Image (cartoon, rainbow, N blue to C red):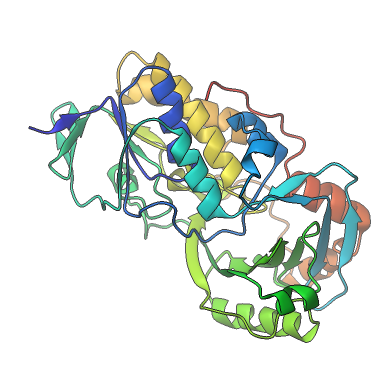
Length: 377
């Protein structure tokens, strides 16, 4: 006979582990399933804002014990092919560099729930009012938290491969040798963001102590490798990154919030984090939206009278209230400007200290204008 759980969460990343912990503290019996064993490598530039730490109730002094925790007080912003702008945000950190292998494992360990790690989801069946997973576990509520390719997403529509605009990214993170660390021009307290000239993506160089993360993401994967190689070559030429990079660049994909079309709930099923397509549209940052979606979902689930789509509908309403209504095709501002005009305007803005600091960094990447979400976790 299949083992019963009040909720089964597919995906043990920040969204899944946060929801699991929140539901467990509310007295629910929860199972988390992930195809990978933890700790595991996760492709991500890797930084979290103070708002994320506050929402999760993380003590920074405790977290930094034995883990990478790089305070960020500055940013270097530029458009490829022109000089960058350096901005100082003061003495207090505006963000922190983390390694996802450490951060995700830390959050998962805090969740005192049953876990089936290193276990792919091979079978999802609707059996009356419940779901049967791998012919082994049964639940009335199935939550998709497994990223863009989460198998639960297919239960709510087309899933991966639909008509949505997908951001494709490639990056590498490695521990530098003492010689590389000494000669590397990148500074830990000042991540570097370099926007593509066609405005379809950006690259980064992010140092976290002895670790270095380099990557590039674009709204489509057209010539992604070419864009990445050109960026890496230029950074090497400037001495900003080591001449020899170990290992291969790893890829991942995700949806931007305004461009995602996935429904969030249906009878007995709900999506959170990247599985729901919640990454911030301007920056592609997904950790804070993942955490907040999990906290909102936990609140709705705990107050729902059952797991029907009608009872879970407030989750979608709260997501819209928190992140805004998704842009529909044909809506919004479309200036219909030629690409060269857009590039010229952007090129000038990327030379502005005010714009790169107040808009690009503080609004688009740090979301300092958005109050911290406080929910029980």
